[in-house]
Amino acid sequence: MRILVIEDEPELARHITRALIRNGHSASAEYDGTAGLQAALAFPPDLLVLDLNLPGLNGLEVLGRLRDSKSAARVLILTARSEVEHRVKGLQAGADDYLTKPFSMDELVARVEALGRRGGTGVGEILEVADLRMDMIHRRVTRAARAIALSPREFDLLQLLMQEPGRVFSRTELCERVWQRSHEYDTRTVEIFIARLRKKVDADSLPPLIYTIRSVGYTVHPPE
Ligand code: CA
Image 1 (cartoon, helix red, strand yellow):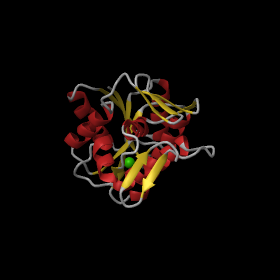
Image 2 (cartoon, protein in one colour; image 1 turned 180 degrees about the horizontal axis):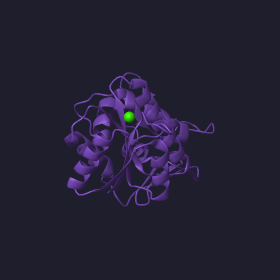
Image 3 (cartoon, rainbow, N blue to C red; image 1 turned 180 degrees about the vertical axis):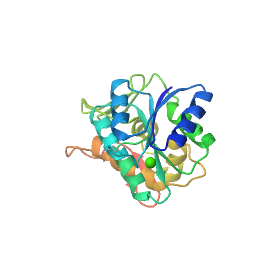
Image 4 (cartoon, rainbow, N blue to C red; image 1 turned 90 degrees about the vertical axis):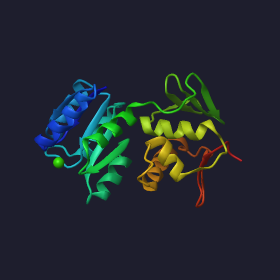
Protein backbone atom coordinates (compact mmCIF):
# COMPACT_ATOMS: atom_id res chain seq x y z
CA MET A 1 0.00 0.00 0.00
CA ARG A 2 1.01 3.60 -0.51
CA ILE A 3 0.81 5.25 2.89
CA LEU A 4 1.13 8.89 3.88
CA VAL A 5 1.98 9.69 7.49
CA ILE A 6 1.05 13.16 8.80
CA GLU A 7 2.66 13.54 12.22
CA ASP A 8 4.43 16.59 13.61
CA GLU A 9 6.81 14.74 15.94
CA PRO A 10 9.66 14.02 13.49
CA GLU A 11 11.06 11.11 15.47
CA LEU A 12 7.69 9.37 15.76
CA ALA A 13 6.98 10.04 12.06
CA ARG A 14 10.34 8.45 11.15
CA HIS A 15 9.67 5.40 13.33
CA ILE A 16 6.27 4.92 11.70
CA THR A 17 7.49 5.24 8.10
CA ARG A 18 10.43 2.88 8.81
CA ALA A 19 8.14 0.25 10.35
CA LEU A 20 5.77 0.46 7.37
CA ILE A 21 8.59 0.23 4.82
CA ARG A 22 10.06 -2.77 6.69
CA ASN A 23 6.68 -4.46 6.24
CA GLY A 24 6.66 -3.98 2.49
CA HIS A 25 4.69 -0.75 2.14
CA SER A 26 5.64 2.49 0.49
CA ALA A 27 5.50 5.28 3.08
CA SER A 28 6.37 8.98 3.30
CA ALA A 29 5.81 11.63 5.97
CA GLU A 30 4.62 15.22 6.23
CA TYR A 31 5.00 17.21 9.43
CA ASP A 32 2.09 19.66 9.40
CA GLY A 33 -1.54 19.62 8.33
CA THR A 34 -1.23 22.03 5.41
CA ALA A 35 1.65 20.21 3.71
CA GLY A 36 0.02 16.87 4.54
CA LEU A 37 -3.28 17.81 2.89
CA GLN A 38 -1.44 19.09 -0.21
CA ALA A 39 0.51 15.84 -0.46
CA ALA A 40 -2.64 13.73 0.02
CA LEU A 41 -4.49 15.61 -2.72
CA ALA A 42 -1.56 15.76 -5.17
CA PHE A 43 -0.66 12.09 -4.93
CA PRO A 44 -3.57 10.23 -3.27
CA PRO A 45 -2.38 7.50 -0.87
CA ASP A 46 -4.22 4.23 -0.21
CA LEU A 47 -4.06 4.95 3.47
CA LEU A 48 -3.39 7.93 5.68
CA VAL A 49 -1.93 7.75 9.19
CA LEU A 50 -3.13 11.07 10.59
CA ASP A 51 -2.20 12.67 13.89
CA LEU A 52 -5.08 14.87 15.09
CA ASN A 53 -3.05 17.43 17.00
CA LEU A 54 -1.06 19.14 14.22
CA PRO A 55 0.28 22.61 13.42
CA GLY A 56 -1.17 24.33 10.34
CA LEU A 57 -4.47 22.60 9.63
CA ASN A 58 -5.33 20.21 12.46
CA GLY A 59 -6.10 16.57 11.76
CA LEU A 60 -9.89 17.04 11.81
CA GLU A 61 -9.62 19.83 9.21
CA VAL A 62 -7.37 17.66 7.02
CA LEU A 63 -9.86 14.80 7.31
CA GLY A 64 -12.83 17.05 6.50
CA ARG A 65 -11.20 18.50 3.38
CA LEU A 66 -10.10 15.06 2.26
CA ARG A 67 -13.60 13.61 2.56
CA ASP A 68 -15.03 16.72 0.83
CA SER A 69 -12.71 15.99 -2.09
CA LYS A 70 -14.26 12.46 -2.24
CA SER A 71 -10.96 10.84 -1.34
CA ALA A 72 -11.37 7.11 -0.81
CA ALA A 73 -8.17 6.80 1.25
CA ARG A 74 -8.53 4.76 4.41
CA VAL A 75 -7.72 6.90 7.43
CA LEU A 76 -6.19 5.77 10.72
CA ILE A 77 -6.12 8.60 13.26
CA LEU A 78 -3.62 8.94 16.11
CA THR A 79 -4.84 10.47 19.35
CA ALA A 80 -3.53 10.98 22.85
CA ARG A 81 -5.18 8.92 25.58
CA SER A 82 -6.67 12.10 27.07
CA GLU A 83 -8.32 13.12 23.79
CA VAL A 84 -11.39 10.85 23.79
CA GLU A 85 -13.54 13.67 22.40
CA HIS A 86 -11.12 14.16 19.48
CA ARG A 87 -11.25 10.47 18.69
CA VAL A 88 -15.06 10.53 18.62
CA LYS A 89 -15.01 13.63 16.38
CA GLY A 90 -12.44 12.00 14.10
CA LEU A 91 -14.61 8.92 13.64
CA GLN A 92 -17.67 11.09 13.04
CA ALA A 93 -15.69 13.08 10.44
CA GLY A 94 -14.89 10.00 8.39
CA ALA A 95 -11.86 8.23 9.91
CA ASP A 96 -11.93 4.43 9.62
CA ASP A 97 -10.04 3.50 12.76
CA TYR A 98 -7.91 5.02 15.52
CA LEU A 99 -4.85 4.27 17.59
CA THR A 100 -4.17 5.76 21.00
CA LYS A 101 -0.67 7.06 21.81
CA PRO A 102 1.60 5.57 22.97
CA PHE A 103 1.38 2.48 20.77
CA SER A 104 3.83 -0.18 19.60
CA MET A 105 4.94 -0.27 15.98
CA ASP A 106 3.62 -3.85 15.78
CA GLU A 107 0.18 -2.59 16.76
CA LEU A 108 0.36 0.20 14.17
CA VAL A 109 1.36 -2.20 11.37
CA ALA A 110 -1.43 -4.63 12.41
CA ARG A 111 -4.04 -1.81 12.32
CA VAL A 112 -2.79 -0.56 8.93
CA GLU A 113 -2.91 -4.05 7.44
CA ALA A 114 -6.37 -4.75 8.87
CA LEU A 115 -7.56 -1.55 7.16
CA GLY A 116 -5.93 -2.62 3.92
CA ARG A 117 -7.81 -5.91 3.80
CA ARG A 118 -11.16 -5.70 2.15
CA GLY A 119 -13.99 -7.01 4.26
CA GLY A 120 -16.41 -9.78 3.37
CA THR A 121 -16.10 -13.06 1.55
CA GLY A 122 -18.86 -12.96 -1.03
CA VAL A 123 -16.88 -11.16 -3.72
CA GLY A 124 -18.74 -11.00 -7.02
CA GLU A 125 -22.19 -10.75 -5.55
CA ILE A 126 -24.89 -8.14 -5.47
CA LEU A 127 -26.64 -7.72 -2.12
CA GLU A 128 -30.15 -6.31 -2.01
CA VAL A 129 -32.42 -5.36 0.87
CA ALA A 130 -35.60 -3.63 -0.37
CA ASP A 131 -34.38 -0.75 -2.58
CA LEU A 132 -30.88 -0.78 -1.06
CA ARG A 133 -28.37 -2.38 -3.43
CA MET A 134 -24.69 -3.19 -2.90
CA ASP A 135 -22.35 -4.11 -5.76
CA MET A 136 -19.43 -5.84 -4.04
CA ILE A 137 -17.15 -5.95 -7.10
CA HIS A 138 -17.23 -2.22 -7.71
CA ARG A 139 -17.94 -1.41 -4.07
CA ARG A 140 -20.94 0.73 -5.04
CA VAL A 141 -24.08 1.27 -3.02
CA THR A 142 -27.39 2.75 -4.16
CA ARG A 143 -30.69 3.39 -2.39
CA ALA A 144 -33.72 3.85 -4.67
CA ALA A 145 -31.23 4.13 -7.57
CA ARG A 146 -29.44 7.07 -5.92
CA ALA A 147 -25.68 6.53 -5.36
CA ILE A 148 -24.47 6.60 -1.74
CA ALA A 149 -20.82 7.43 -1.02
CA LEU A 150 -19.51 5.31 1.85
CA SER A 151 -16.08 5.26 3.49
CA PRO A 152 -14.34 1.86 3.37
CA ARG A 153 -15.29 0.99 6.96
CA GLU A 154 -18.89 2.14 6.49
CA PHE A 155 -19.03 -0.12 3.44
CA ASP A 156 -17.64 -3.11 5.37
CA LEU A 157 -20.13 -2.60 8.21
CA LEU A 158 -23.12 -2.30 5.87
CA GLN A 159 -21.93 -5.32 3.88
CA LEU A 160 -21.85 -7.48 6.99
CA LEU A 161 -25.36 -6.37 8.00
CA MET A 162 -26.75 -6.84 4.46
CA GLN A 163 -25.28 -10.33 4.10
CA GLU A 164 -27.77 -11.63 6.67
CA PRO A 165 -30.89 -9.43 6.60
CA GLY A 166 -32.93 -9.75 9.76
CA ARG A 167 -30.09 -11.21 11.81
CA VAL A 168 -29.29 -9.09 14.85
CA PHE A 169 -25.56 -8.39 15.26
CA SER A 170 -24.30 -7.41 18.70
CA ARG A 171 -22.04 -4.36 19.00
CA THR A 172 -19.23 -6.65 20.14
CA GLU A 173 -19.52 -8.89 17.09
CA LEU A 174 -19.58 -5.89 14.74
CA CYS A 175 -16.56 -4.47 16.54
CA GLU A 176 -14.66 -7.73 16.15
CA ARG A 177 -15.62 -8.48 12.56
CA VAL A 178 -15.37 -5.01 11.05
CA TRP A 179 -12.47 -3.57 13.09
CA GLN A 180 -10.78 -6.80 14.17
CA ARG A 181 -10.67 -5.45 17.69
CA SER A 182 -11.09 -8.49 19.87
CA HIS A 183 -9.32 -7.15 22.94
CA GLU A 184 -10.51 -3.60 23.00
CA TYR A 185 -14.21 -3.58 23.66
CA ASP A 186 -15.26 -0.32 22.07
CA THR A 187 -18.94 -0.15 21.28
CA ARG A 188 -18.94 3.65 20.97
CA THR A 189 -17.14 3.33 17.62
CA VAL A 190 -19.86 1.00 16.35
CA GLU A 191 -22.55 3.46 17.47
CA ILE A 192 -20.85 6.32 15.63
CA PHE A 193 -20.59 4.29 12.43
CA ILE A 194 -24.23 3.15 12.63
CA ALA A 195 -25.22 6.82 12.99
CA ARG A 196 -23.09 7.68 9.96
CA LEU A 197 -24.70 4.88 7.92
CA ARG A 198 -28.22 5.91 8.96
CA LYS A 199 -27.56 9.48 7.80
CA LYS A 200 -26.62 8.18 4.36
CA VAL A 201 -28.83 5.10 3.89
CA ASP A 202 -32.03 6.10 5.68
CA ALA A 203 -31.96 9.74 4.52
CA ASP A 204 -34.61 11.81 2.73
CA SER A 205 -37.54 10.39 4.74
CA LEU A 206 -37.15 6.97 3.09
CA PRO A 207 -38.50 4.13 5.23
CA PRO A 208 -35.67 3.01 7.55
CA LEU A 209 -33.75 -0.19 6.80
CA ILE A 210 -31.29 -0.04 9.72
CA TYR A 211 -32.86 -1.03 13.04
CA THR A 212 -31.61 -0.85 16.61
CA ILE A 213 -32.69 -3.77 18.78
CA ARG A 214 -32.52 -2.37 22.29
CA SER A 215 -29.71 -3.75 24.42
CA VAL A 216 -28.97 -6.39 21.77
CA GLY A 217 -27.55 -4.71 18.67
CA TYR A 218 -28.37 -3.82 15.08
CA THR A 219 -30.01 -5.39 12.07
CA VAL A 220 -30.86 -4.47 8.48
CA HIS A 221 -34.13 -5.66 6.96
CA PRO A 222 -36.89 -4.45 4.60
CA PRO A 223 -39.43 -2.03 6.12
CA GLU A 224 -42.30 -3.78 7.92
CA1 CA B 1 0.95 15.99 17.33
